[in-house]
Image (cartoon, rainbow, N blue to C red):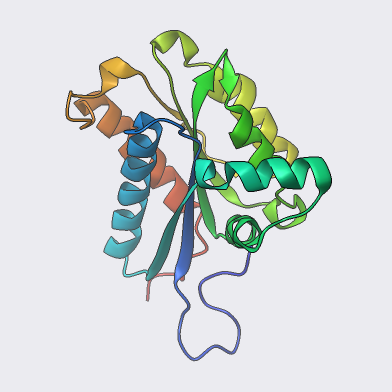
Length: 198
């Protein structure tokens, strides 16, 4: 995991970096809505503990062409390099993907294929996914968990899956989705390298 919020010799704590990566491709995107829900709850919990937070969201679709170019010919744009570095240097990571044919989206996987596994080791990660029906719930355990376990991440026990029935028409979470997101965010925060009280 990257250095904690209080680096040795530092006169002031640096903000805790919380990065959310969303693989949604539609607009409006329920995957982005779920990502925002999880990020907001994580930031709120950290702020309540007095922790300064640097929160960022990366839309994988914004880098789709650059990801394809980097995968095929190995040339990376400055924008893609910055996005990858942001993920690699995050203290806490939230990832969410839509389900395509029973697994994560291709552009989501291609993006993480370009992430350096070394700085990902021991990085706390919250896994989330969206799908048309609850039949895809197991995508988190069958596809996402093995991918991030391969990189050596510390994976939050509670994954968050949301189908169409879990949202209102205005894309507000139903109570049960909100509760699960709250629980998962709490688990992610407990992985943070926070200073001891007092």
